[in-house]
Length: 92
Image 1 (cartoon, rainbow, N blue to C red):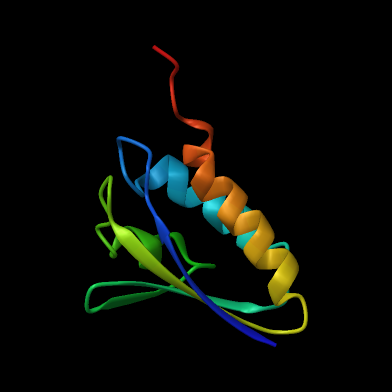
Image 2 (cartoon, one colour):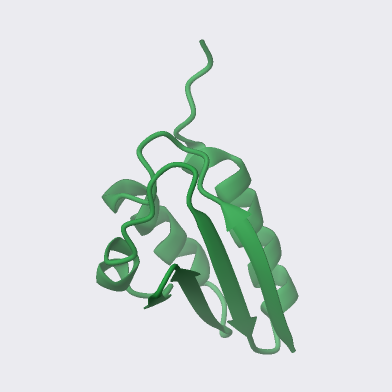
């Protein structure tokens, strides 16, 4: 199965080290290959260094491509993490 979706980075710090580490931890629970694209850059979502190289700031539109037998479960977990701002959003 292959899933291609777009999602926005909503946390104010963007896809930085802590958020990237959370994403890597989620993605590594699945067998599927997960690739993130931002502009001309592409990253293996199982690699923190690849993710940081995306330079995805708040508001960035990310294309997520997931290929594998557990793609749907992987997408559900990835989307949840992005939608919750990597659990870094502070209520004001």
